[in-house]
Image (tube, one colour):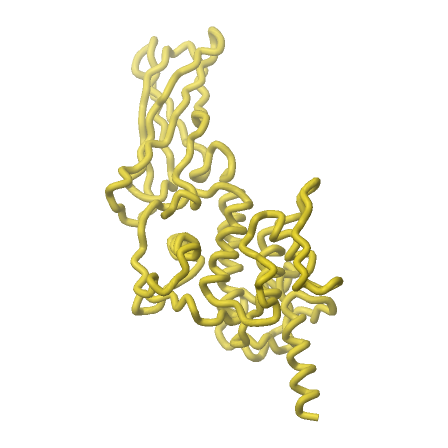
Length: 313
């Protein structure tokens, strides 16, 4: 009988994170921290995770590879790619609850393989690599090109280091008081929930701010027109929410599209790659002059962006 109880419990935990038979949303009595509870409730309301029972989340249980792939794929909104065949791994049973998520992950080039042990715990560095790769598949995002000291980085696999740097820089993951990430430790359900929730907020905030297109550093630049005299106006262009003071802004060209309208194109000036800058959200301004008879519009020049996560090394 004890063996049967353990087996049933294991099956519940295995499928409850994202499986069928969702448990209705309720207060989880085993999550004491109000912030953690809010995170879990938010993910549960979106159908990303579920509790083991109506009032238990079991936050300290380790997350399996299958659960992690399903969680990350659903949270980042990745969908099957048309006309691209997935990878049918022989280690994924036919009809497995996580089979579709694995197929989608493979199509998008996420770090999944037939060698993965789907029902065994996933390490912190492997989850970081999985999550960071999935985020990058949803768009190009502004990230400070700055190296963060991680005390145990030498314990990481080479392919995990950039991912961990990205998550730490963007505050989706945290180091401990000794600046360690503990890459080889198995990840708990609560740790996975925290990182996943932060990733969803990151994606949403940048999509709302225009990230992922030509303009990749937040909302569009603001414009101020100052009259110099009857013939000339000064155009002041200001870019807010730049990742740090190393970024600047400059006017690249003015296109007089008609006898009444002019388009002023600006570009973000990239920081010196050989310097380190404080992680302080900053603004930058530039100015130019346009004859007063023209109505002025301001646009980002093609290719205008700050450094994206794939450029971090």
